[in-house]
Amino acid sequence: MWRLASFTLGVALLLASQSRPALAAAASPLEGVWQVVDVNGQRAAGVYIFTGTHYSMMFTVGDRPDVDTNKATADELRAVWGPMAANAGVFEINGDQVTIRPIVAKIPVVMKPGAYEVYAFRIEGNKLFLTQVRNVRGPVEHGNAITLMRVE
Image (tube, rainbow, N blue to C red; front, side, top):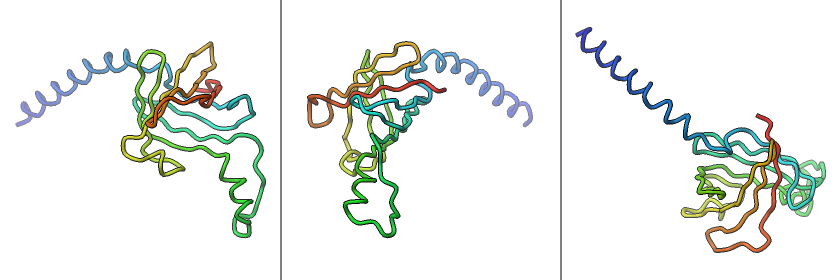
């Protein structure tokens, strides 16, 4: 019995060692943690995390008021909530474009089955530039232009 267990463990270790180099070679140029610097030329704060085939992102543009959400008016809540973008899901790279497919998002339509967004990307040193070019509805004119800096 122990021979069978040893053989099975040996085969599992061999297969694992064979698959690791292939996984490492397929690492994405986006893999890592990126801090949002600006969106469409406006000061922004946020983070994008790319790892394996999954991503997570959250950012806000400009200043948001500091309000007591238990006492805030509808307009005050919109001022806090509106400038935020947040979603997470899977991504794939094709040439100089990255397609994201959100699984969860701040805005429900963004995470509907079949929804996606495509961004052209380029990396210059420790900076990543993303420009939205299309989504599930078609080409995007004047899509968001996001500048990020690698932090990890």
